[in-house]
Image 1 (spheres, rainbow, N blue to C red):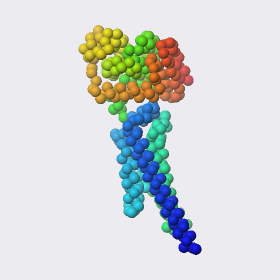
Image 2 (image 1 turned 90 degrees about the horizontal axis):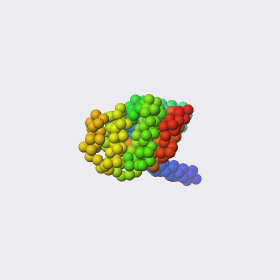
Image 3 (image 1 turned 135 degrees about the horizontal axis):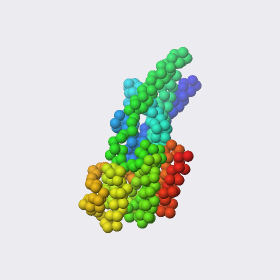
Length: 355
């Protein structure tokens, strides 16, 4: 009878262990898939876009996730036959847990918004950590029946794990920085770039309603330039707008002080040509004493991507649209159409979101 009970318990333990291993493998797979999705930049929320601007020791966060999950997975599988790999898996998962604490801290207190994919990756790491620590504690309990010895072993293991968690946190906290390379490559911001108040202006170069709203937008931008960060976004409702994006990006980056005048010149040119060449643009802006500076292909691509991500993040589907946002209060007001988009409404919205 005793032998039967022992075999039953042993069989149950093996079944439980098998389920645990399948669960760990499923979490590893989920973490890897999420890391790949993050690398593909599928998430279009503003929090995801902002998080992607951060790097760890100069490299994108996503690359560490893509490298971590397969490496830790391999250590976990090899740990079944070699204790050194089992210990390596525990160390890796502990360091990763500490690193995820730093990443979550950045999202909470610096970005002040949550990237859903990043949070899901952190959850995968913590599930792996809990399953690993549970197995380790269970192994200690099975190998010894002396309470004092068990307490001492668990204390040592917990202390060691805590050390690796702290190491992971400090490494990530120190190594995580906002990459300025992307912002410098596509710095299209006007006004007060350090302001929490943000004025997003979404227009299409061939949109009649945009032309009608343009004078009001110009007056509002002139009035709000010292208090708000101003971002002009091209939304190509009409495909011809794509032909003007490289020129507009160049002026936003290189001629910030004369941008509104150059914008008028581009607007006048849209009435004459749907496919202007560099010589046509130069002729239009020569009276302003400005020389057109072509941008690199990759820079233009980054600008187009930024426009697309921003429009999707704020759910903009028509032009003209003005989004007034305050990064501190988290308040936001949308003004849609030439009737709503007036200097008075825009300035009032800036006051309202800041309260």
